Amino acid sequence: MPLDQTDSLPESETKEMTFLEHLEELRWHLIRALLAIVIFAVVVFMAKDFVWHDIILAPSRTDFWTYRMLCQAADYLHSDGLCIDDLPFIIQSRKMTGQFTMHITTSVLIGLIISFPYVFWEIWRFIKPGLYEKERRNTRGAVFWVSLLFMIGVLFGYYIIAPLSVNFLAHYRVDQSIHNEFELINYVSTISTIVIATALLFQLPIIVYVLTKAGLVTPQLMKTYRRHAIIVILILGAILTPPDPISQILVAIPLFGLYQISIFISAAVVKADALKEQKFLTRKKNGT
Image 1 (cartoon, one colour):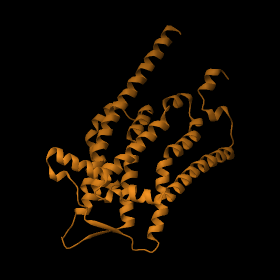
Image 2: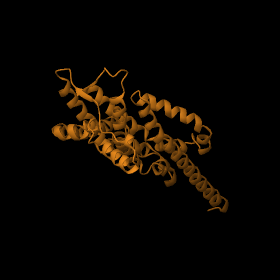
Image 3: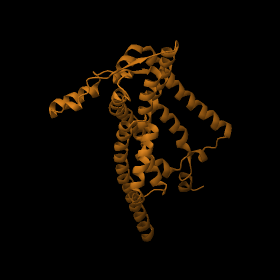
Image 4: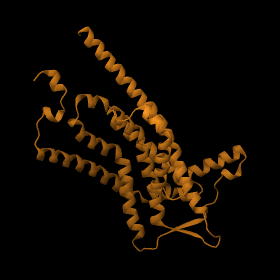
């Protein structure tokens, strides 16, 4: 087989592997990924005081970083309404095994978040050999960008959406005689849902890049359906966040910004592909 034809084939076709060999390779990738999650989960489990007091329960206290920044902004702008200096609720656990169960669950979840770059890298190592050379070039840096956007989404969800949602839900009352006493599992699930959902939604530019490379999305198409995208973004915000308008709006705003950025990414991909096509045609015309 000529060299240029061999290079155009996936790596998996240049190195023959049986179905069972593929399963065995996948098994080891998954084992290493799970091992990384378990290691970080154990570390998180052992650091109980720091993780729970300074991370998980931090948005439930007025000394949280976001609240302090808002109070500083309130002083600078002379607007007392921005400062959050009261969170009228308590967190309680009504089940005997509630705290221990949540300790294990949150340790695994945080372990997954911390080890996500490595887990994705292991999955990518299994997928990459099956790609053609052109596809491997187009997806260069995928692990870095996916991991970066994931972590930015985690930080945005934790420091922006989660505390403002907690503040809104803590102050929301249908009657002043009703006091907010939140279950530990509900509090943790609200925070974790916001953080994970935001991290996944921040993958929009990567999705648009891949779809544009596949010829399924164009910048013109995204501009045409911009209004429809806004509706979809609002629906996603309503589905993936707690049922309050503050969370939905706070998720929708960065998503719309990411949508606009994705249009520029799609346009850049189309432009780059057009230049490559033009250079190829020029070389073909010149017989080189």
